[in-house]
Every structure is written in structure tokens, then in C-alpha cells.
Image 1 (cartoon, one colour):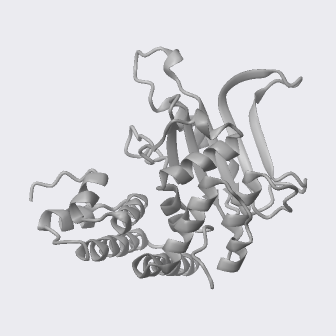
Image 2 (cartoon, rainbow, N blue to C red):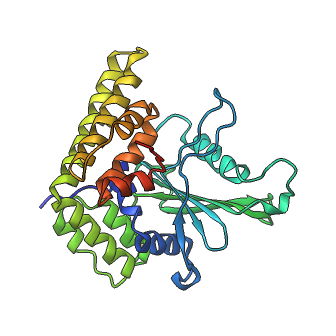
Length: 294
């Protein structure tokens, strides 16, 4: 049976909403005991923008460890122009966004970027690379910046937990997923989440709609370059959010207006996931931080 693919930003973000999965995935990538991570809480995934024309930094999944370190987990399936510079841009914004004017530099937190890519960065066989700030002799300058690159397409060499995470992300069918022999609690939890996503009609329909929207957008962008494209995308996502919420309760005029007024498609993407996961309209409003009076 075909399953919901984790090589999709919607399903990958949905999976990372599971705290147990987040916790074990980060521990396995960073190669630290899971007991050292008391909590991995989701932070606001929209980096601060001071000026209207300043580029907004939007992360796939941003978590904070118990020691206040920040971790950005980003899935990049297709090669995009300057993806490496994009990763550094987000890492730099993560590093500086919490420091207020007049505060001392010691408040800056360690920032880690985990890039999961489905293309070859180079021809070397190693599929997990770790980069830090070092001099030409290998002496470390600072531990505050750390970049991980995990290449999904390279041949796996061993039976580590990270290898099993890669197998899960690459899995296309339930049979391939069942072949992952592991006792890792995080991976087992992730497998159950993928099964649930694949079987739940509402989530499956939303997943398929998300794929169609991406395909349609790519087709439009091949032939059309007009200002109205982004507006149309936002309206389509807003309608999808409200359709999901309508199954969970009544929608007030204030909520409907707030959703349609949101033009940032990345925020609407997050709202789609929250709407799919929420048990009620009220829970969605709370998680989306929509304080409505009517």
C-alpha cells in the first residue's frame, strides 16, 4: 500500500508536530543521548522582520532545546538556486533575532541547522556532513554555529538510527516502511504517525490537495508571471483552512475574515496543519494565536 510520503513539506511538518518524534530525531542527528534532551519545544517558525521590505525568514521546523539552543530542521527536495546561501541566511537570522538593542552578546544562543536534501551536494559517499567554524588547521573558533547536511539519495553504509530515519523518509510503500528493523522509540512513533496520516481520510485528502496545489503552482509559474498569482494562492489556502475548520465547529465572521485577510502563504500553510490537527475551532484559534472578539 502506498503511504503519505515524508518527502513533502506538509507531511514532514505534520510529523514534526509530534514531540516524541522531534526529540528522538534531533538526538539521533546530533548524536547525543535522548536523555540529555528534557524538552524540544516548537518555536515561532516565522523569523522577525523589522522593515516591510526586509526579507522574511521562514523556517520549516524551528525547535528550541532545553539549554536554549535553537535547531532549524529544513527539508529541501529539489535543487534550488543558492540553497546554501539561503541556509546561511536563516542561520544568521536565528542567531541574531533574540538580541535586543543594548543587550550583551553573551545572550546569543547556539544555532544548529539540519538540512535534509534529496540531491547530491557532492560526489563523495558520505551522506551526513557536519560543518562548524574552524581555522585552516582545524581549530574551532566557536561552537555557536553548526550546520548538518543529510543527503537522502546516497548509499547507506550502516545500521545507525540516522540510517533508519533516512529509510523512513525515503519510504514510498508500507512494505518498505515495515522493512525498517528498529527498536528506536522515536522511529517507531514516526512510523505509526505515517500510518495514521496515510489512513485518515481528511489528512490524506489535504495531503493530495497540497500536492495538486504545488503541481499547479509550478505549471502556472512556467507560463505566467503576474502579480495576481500570489493572491490566488493565498485565497485557495484560506478556503482550505476554513473547510477543515467547518468540520470541527461553527466559524464566526471574525475568524473567517481573519483567515481571508492573511496573505502570507507560508503562514496559511502553518494554519492548514494546525486546522488538520486541532480538535476544535477554539483549539485552532489558540494555537494560531488568533484572538477574536466575535
